[in-house]
Length: 186
Image (cartoon, rainbow, N blue to C red; front, side, top):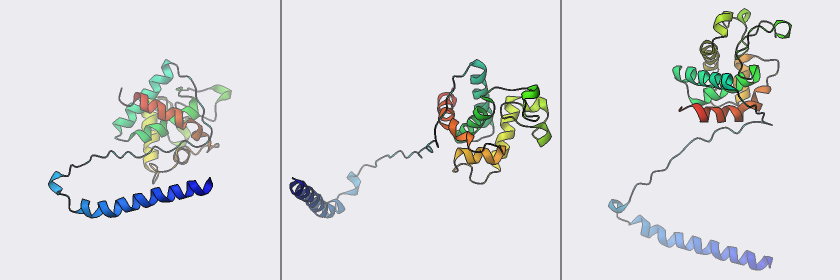
């Protein structure tokens, strides 16, 4: 049976080759006026999320913060990929909640959607807790990363954030991609 299958496949391959040999010269003499251009849509494949993915259900405040991040990304003239990286970063840092000072539970003086620190030069507490400002500050850092568009999300986010948990951003890539897809044109 294996031999029959192999012979059948060789026969099919031989016919395909012969058809190409005979059709090639005929196609070469075809009238170019009759040829119709074929439109081909080429879309770059989105990077595949790395590792296990996490997901949370968003409330109205978190959804508003997603929209604010997307609006700031558009205002900065950056593509959807920048919004995906920003939203994934905010999902990791604050679960898209605009956090104020958390007292003893606070990580140093980290504030806002991206847990940026006034003492690290991100801005004043009032600025950092403004979603448009904090997103713009994050995007400014992202734009300074050579090749951020083509690197893994977690690497781009980590280069800007300098987190103690550099691989943690990757788990949010799928949800961030879905959120940008849902809200980019709304």
